[in-house]
Length: 326
Image (tube, rainbow, N blue to C red):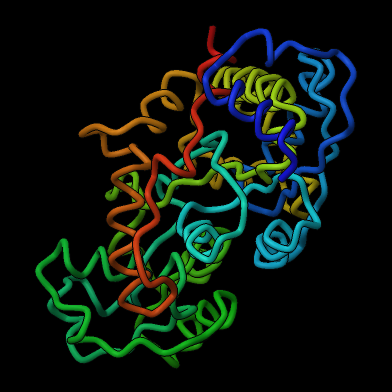
């Protein structure tokens, strides 16, 4: 990285207002977005004019495949991306130059361990098969659910399936349990094929979602990320005050009816300025990314995704969330 870029980044991380306000003319930043409610919310920011109002020169880039968006950021094909913290740690450990600049949300019911109607207790899962995309958020949530309820993950049989295939396998009776997210939760329930025995609402902070950005872009345009955070805070306030209108804006982007999308939106805890500041610093809070990083790293090391836990202070940059909250 060139010396002048390092200098600008250093000023940005120190919260120097002069560096953050050094120009009103920005190059457009690309932000990857996929079909998670906490990220589709950016279309509310676009629709309501918050990006323009707060001078965030941002182009939303839609990805039908979430995994592809994560890969695009790591490959330098995006400036920033909306992704889960758990999927950010491996690229960071491997040296991809990205930082967490904003927390969009926590899953609060949109991810679940679904079981067929004959299963009502965790003890009944012993020896059973759970379909899930292996080494993923869903497997991590399923193992968290089992452990919290006194069941060793080793006492069940995980089989690798895409989320859609896992849901279909549960619906058709080929497996007794599946780790899925919405809209698959709703589809299983609509067919009366199963129910959630555990959801992310019971595990605050287990699945945090964030905006990660390339360090070179942060260094060159720090004010852009302050503006982006301001637009996000306005978006969260609107959605909380007008959830029905927000669902009407968001639903067409994922080919759902607004009433259907409202359910998914309700299972997402969107992070305002206060929650961002709580999440982006160490402490006892269950939403702290420092705690999430530690807990998630245990799982990722066990499945071989990483060799060591990335140091949270090295990749969590609260500068922009703090500045935007002033």
